[in-house]
Length: 79
Image (cartoon, rainbow, N blue to C red):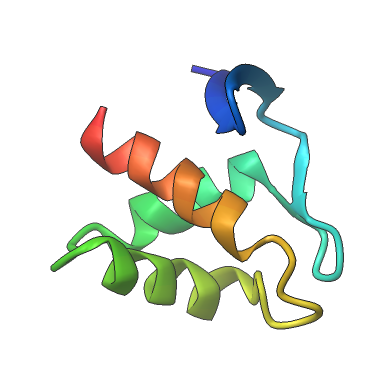
């Protein structure tokens, strides 16, 4: 869908597709979705993160978004 729920400590946060996940590189939830669709095959969560990072350049600035991006990818892969 166009939104998803991710963990933010102890609560669920609904995110819109156009919500920015990586502010340094201006990567949105929709960008991560598109990167996952483009990459298609994953060995594990870390390889999926690496593929998304190569495609979007997310988490190559300050790195503060790393865990949030992993959460998004995990929810997408393992829902």
